[in-house]
Image (cartoon, rainbow, N blue to C red; front, side):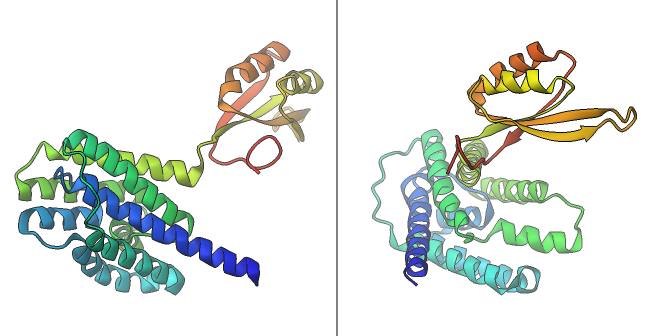
Length: 280
């Protein structure tokens, strides 16, 4: 019972803090410099800069039809969390307008604003909450055209919004600052969700199991032996599985090459690695 209560409190704190960072990114950096983001937030920012409409109110109102349309697509649990995320970010954006404005340079504001928004969104995403917007539109489009890529659809919709905002505000150079803000946000969200401690996985097909294994163990990394056989030759071979940290990639490649020049080696990115020697 205590664990559930602690987990609930932790979730509430994370969501509230994430929404506050989201609001701070808009009020401290993006709006003061006239930088427009992608998605519903970008539409709301453009309307604020042109007509003075409240950003948070537009975010909430514009997301309502998208949320309702997605009920059958994603289920109630996702919709409820999305509605909470949209409501909190919208309300906080309109309430927390007292944040100090220390920068007005559009380049720096795009960089810091995108980074701060990425932190806020990333924290919320880790708890299953979203800020709605473009993602909801993508879900609806893919329901009919499933072959379309989520990444490409998101990019297209964001590009349309950014270019449309530039035309509305007659600020075409703002497209470049908007692109920087979107890139910064995406990079930070990816960093939070996938972890900063990225690793590399080696899959090595070799007939020199002991030699290669010992060479990798000399780097203070564990090695797992998987048994296999060649499809055409039907000869027994060993597949060594080893995960190393980024700074050990060159040393590991060199060790394998020295131990067995004929080894077939695959090196793959690992976004998250848990266990002894890595994240607990």
